[in-house]
Length: 468
Image (cartoon, rainbow, N blue to C red; front, side, top):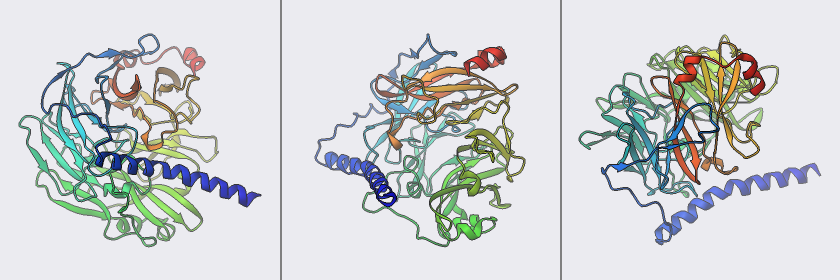
């Protein structure tokens, strides 16, 4: 009976996994026949007036407005990539042509810029290098409002484009952008097509019948992390996967599976980098396993910050803390009490839970002053309200008290990589959040004002504990 039950479970999993490729194949066929109806592109360069709308004004603890029009589907990128320009005036967004399937080669999304002062939107570029979790990988140049970066498919692994918002000129690069250094002079990225091997929604579209994958066994010496000089345009392989794995204490285990690169993140001061490794079919058990390696900006001093054995207990969404020395993520501690907000040093030492021992969830990050942790939650993490809304959680780190800041509509459950993740991300000034949500069945972008909350520091502790 056990074997039969296991076979049925595997069969259901295979059918579920096949749904999204079938949707994409159907969409591609319909597009070729002229039967799919994607969103009509916006007039290029024309400013479109916007009417900002209050979001759940009676139910939110902080003021929130929707800054995108209800006639389309929009998203920012990730919870640690600020979509606001250095001055704070402009917001970068990806406008999606459809949301019912994954993109395929040839499907074009629009790169849009919202002027928060004039309350206008304009489309500045169309790209075939996008996905449903990170959009077109939009990054502002950290020191000027003039340049905005996105990715295109290029030859398949992805390639960056710099958009000059003053002249409209495009500069194309030979490698993609996943993370940009704080001075804006260089960027890092793995091959974006290979990201799809371990998780959809974060790379670039692939042709269904020609997906590129790594061979099993010894980590690849030809694939790895590319460093792109954004001034000269020169690209180089900074570290191959083999280079990354070889110095790790877990190298013997990882070398017997197949390892891919996932998220790469540059510390706020530019001094160190962490790379999430995704390894498949290691000798002790099948399936995907995750670990974190860190190294200096030149690719040296490689350390194992989090072994896969520790991540196995449960964990997700690491990011750098503002001090550039520590990494924060949802992680199950040794006691096995479920996810908690845990931080550890770049070399893996000094692991500790944040004050209050709150349950971890969603996409956690801390404001630049270190006082307030904000995160959302997946609908399967046990935080959602009966109406299916996800919480925007605020945890005050001086005492660990918690407050519900808002309830977010994330659309229907069970969308897998088509899901709407809020990805709450701090503004550069540390007093605003940019958030994805669903309004009227459309993907939209919200701005939440947290300045008043930060100035007040925290509600009474007793009240916060009752709310939690």
